[in-house]
Length: 344
Image (cartoon, rainbow, N blue to C red):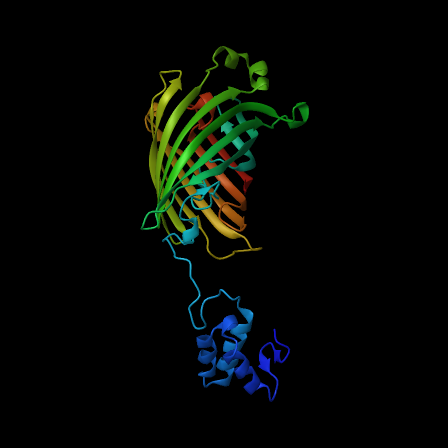
């Protein structure tokens, strides 16, 4: 910067020299640019014009030209990202609140009435799972786009009635392992999620040792299935519905078709301690059980991170109907408890 100019101001008596400097130095700023500044009547605007000339590089846009603005492709992402994105985030399709097998981390404690297994017991339900964005396709002209995710999880149920008497800290009743891939399409308030996955189930060693009848009647239950789910969001509410078809199942006599529906609420204002109210209802019916639905209800508080996929939830929950766990899919259960849920 020339020594006679102070950023944001011109020293008294130097104005004429400054104008002359602009006029005789077209290689640096351009003759037309200098005359543009001289022609400005307002002193403050003229001074800002001079400052812009000093600050900008030699290849900058002419004075008065508008700054370039990234085009918006319709889904609030800059045009430079419109070519697709590897390893994107997964926040655009929030996880289902009340689905007992949604991939997330959680542990819940409560009372489980499960006559087919051990009757009325204190139990803990535990889940370890997550989803990873693999690729987000370029958006269409209306902003809609597809994204591919990998998903996986473990869902286990423990009998903690005799917690102090068990060397393992509680008898494992059953564990379900699932892995798969999802493809979802987002278009404004509309969302479609397609899911292809494998699930296998395993009875706990303590259950097999203490109740030999399960060793005799054990099912090597596993399957591959295809899910389709449509969701519509308006304000804090989201409604969804869809179905599942079992592509391969062992044993083969297991029926193929399920229906799923639900309703969710995500509060928009903190209720207490910076936590937002959330609630969800999930219904799943299977022709294996003559369409008798499994009902899952969860509600409580949610502490949110930088996006909807990062959260800590404290929820009260109720589960009733045919079991969603392992080989006990035709046995009724009733569970009332509370748990912590984590999204990362």
